[in-house]
Length: 37
Image 1 (cartoon, rainbow, N blue to C red):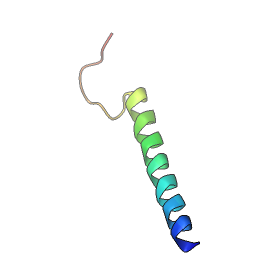
Image 2 (tube, helix red, strand yellow; image 1 turned 180 degrees about the horizontal axis):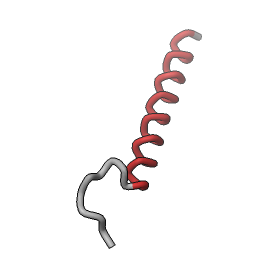
Image 3 (cartoon, rainbow, N blue to C red; image 1 turned 60 degrees about the vertical axis):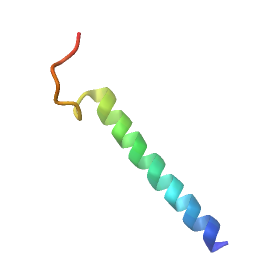
Image 4 (cartoon, rainbow, N blue to C red; image 1 turned 90 degrees about the vertical axis):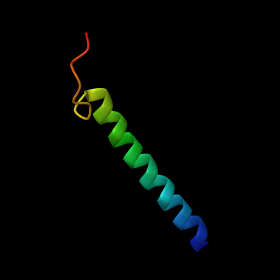
């Protein structure tokens, strides 16, 4: 049972990080390149 809980926690952490990175990428705050049209 502990194995599944650790796996679920790891998946949630990865999903949360991916969501933050995706949101920052879509927002344009992570990319410091020239603003595209």
